[in-house]
Image 1 (cartoon, protein in one colour):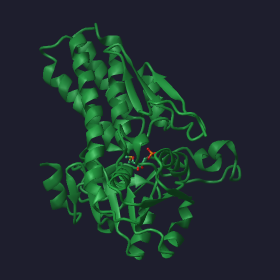
Image 2: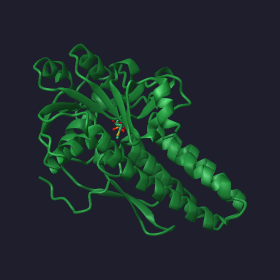
Image 3: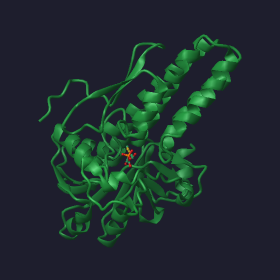
Image 4: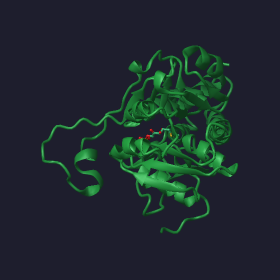
Length: 355
Ligand code: MRU
């Protein structure tokens, strides 16, 4: 077992306006606990692209700090040069990963702050304002995890088996997660919950991150390969499925890690409730349905050469979408920091999210 430092924070901003971002390198877990220091926006872009930091809320926080890093070199420039650089940095970071809307949501918050105050504040003062906004996004993310946990825990009963996919836990957020917050809060309230974690092909976030994180926190967890979920359900081992989300359309369709849709179909076939836990920052009400959610396509080598070993013949054609879309009709409830949205309809979502 690796030795762990006390501070397990997924992301930390160290110092003031001339400070830097440091984050857990999630590509190295579970065998090594290493932090990456990001002193420029290019390092943040690479960290997001290569999944050193991943999970929709954590990507949003990283991008907000990344914008501040990208603006440090123009803190003493003209206001025009500062705002021009802001637009460039937002576009640049936005090119890292397309699906998680939190990335864009966080950066748009920073852009709005800059636009509102640009006539009155010097670039240096504006940078301080943007860092304050990034810190606020970070803090709100912590509170959102706790609130999601509180709302969602009531949906789980004592003694249940719960299946989860990918990692929607502490590593994916500023506190203890979205889907896993539901489980942690249920456990804290005295319920016994046994988690089944899908390993989550091809990058194994379930095996490397969720299984690790649950072990660290003492929550009973059994790891399964993705293709075992149907059998596990048929054997009556799970009574609920809880997953996170990368983007939720206005009608409740959910984009999440590839394999989520299949689990929802299986859950429906076994009459098992399928829950999605996500903050309001993951809802994209500008998108009518899941059809319009951009799905990230990733390097075929993640499938043919995963973790350094070739497992497919040279030259084979590969399709590697990183996310899929689960239709709203398969989702029993959405759990956000403002409460439980059930049934999952456009009207209920609009009432809660745009309130
Ligand atoms: O490719 P990843 O690891 O960033 O995918 C992450 C997921 O799909 C999570 O379930 C989602 O971002 C929610 S994290 C609270």
